[in-house]
Image (cartoon, rainbow, N blue to C red; front, side, top):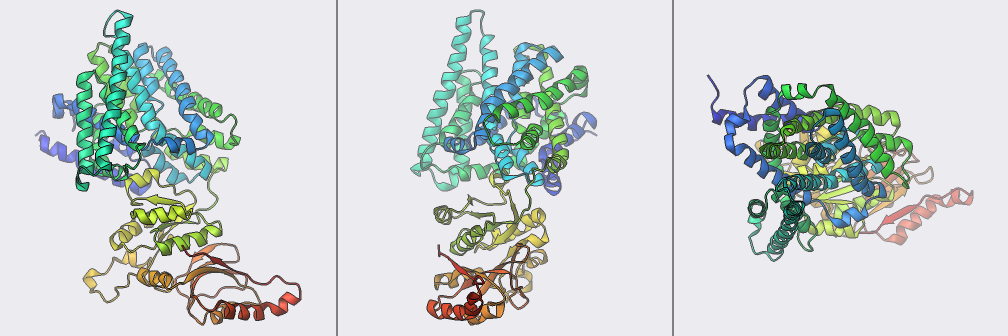
Length: 628
């Protein structure tokens, strides 16, 4: 008995969530499981036939999904961020796009003997990588900060730029076929560009203006922007054939660069769409892949893939690296990492369908070509990136830094103290005022939920291997603790006591989270915030044979709270309990100390170090971290 349409649709949702969870558990890009799952339920088992299930709605649905993907990607394209990145990251966009596009086009045309139109479109699509496949790979490999930043920003920027290039190539192909007269074809192409840029800029300005002037309620910002974008996309297509993708890309870029318009909440709204819409889209598109179409391409397809991975990418990297300070090992690693992602899959399916309607018979080869490219790059590079990075010695030496959940006064004080000792620190908070203050203190900060999908693509965890929860948001604290227990491990997640020990058993936090609590002698966030408001400050103390830990305790009369210690091997450790703390004489203490009489403390310290100082030994020092 064949499955009902309702059961098939529900199955797609369940499979999407299951593959996303599996990818999260094994820390590889979800696209790998989504593509494999789509092929399994499609051509292998024959359970899902997208053309039968969705009928004429299939490609309109794909078209709208691609518009959402491109719009979200373009919202991350800020001009000041492009200017602020290294020369290598900037070079890879134009040079890499040109080199990869040309080589991909020539390889597809000469090796597979497809039409120039389809070959050029394949070359344009093949340049796209994307943060959805780069971010999980970087978290697993942990390359050096320089390499991680280059790959991360290449993925963010090349996503909308590559899609835009593919749209322009497609529009050129379509306009060229509108008539036999060159002038007419040029007119159609110019019209498409004019409408795309003009309507996109106008729509971006109007939507940004509505957000900035609060013309629509806050709870409708996300849904309203999405609905308006889809309406603009459809209207643009009515004005000029297939100009909608260009329009929404320009609209997103305009909003991203419009002053006093925050798009962070809109980007976070993409999370639920990613789990359902985007994941389902991958399964549906992969289910349409035909093994016969791949087999018809023969070994020539393997040659094209080899050319792109072993010639086009290395040539792009080495040309882009001219004049930079990258060494040969870093260049080789960058040459190997270029997985293709969701935009390539969705755009190829959409454009192949449109070209087939225009009479390009070889357009049927576009989808299997792109899907095999995605599967090959994601699989090979996900499995080999870590050993290659170790072989080339380009991995981060140690992930001893801290991601601090919270950018409040206490978190900023701790962040400044750790940064003074060159410990990598990133603060994350959803409170804009806290984030603003952290930026004024010159601290690295992420504005948003650190466990969101937006964070998975944009939160830089290079050098970060620990989570420190210093936040009053109990619900977010628990979610972040669960999330990073799997990323960092049980011994690298630390949180404060909740301060509600008398609550009933049914309200107690899960045992897994309780294991992480009890930091800083069991104080709560409220207690730390109270101490900070009373004038407590964070100070660094170097212990020695002349100024031992007992002297430190006597100096502050037991009122100091030791937060971190640097041991004899210069390893930093958060302190759970001062009763169990037995530091050696060469350790360094980072402590929260009361606003005692400064002269009285100095007199005690001077008496303790007077004799060794007379013998020429260096006295101990205590450096104050100014209060935020």
